[in-house]
Length: 216
Image (cartoon, rainbow, N blue to C red):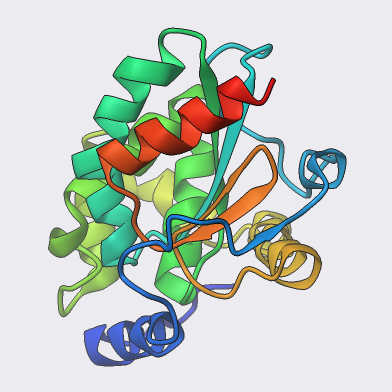
């Protein structure tokens, strides 16, 4: 059983912050590296959930952790504008991949995957209510309560957390990102293969996407 025990808040937050400490809260607006797009987009342990047109000229891949406050800030404050201006208009497509920083983030990603085509909407819901589960004294109870809003009942909730294959696949996605692409903090973004770490504001996304479109 992958989640027979999940520690209380103090350990979880400490583990996440320890990994994030080496990364800036806000991204260096110049890419910090580049990976081959073909390798980045190769089949993974879990299928990508793609938001936007398949033939969009710009591909954005985010590696995120469900317990990362910087990731939550991006999805709450920036992603809606990114979606409106670029994803919904066919200029970019967006893929969120799992990079859990702790067992609770792994559990949240597993549960979101169980919702199928509602996975990204569930991720947004969990980020919007992050404080109600990730930073509570009873995180699993908080997580279950939030996911009831997405239609996930307690019996299914408990069954998903015992799914060893899903648990391993979420961690394979994370491990591949660390080993192949040098991801070691969240959020980390790849835009047409260029790597950016930390939060990126709306105006900087405008500049980044415009530069990628102009280069086509």
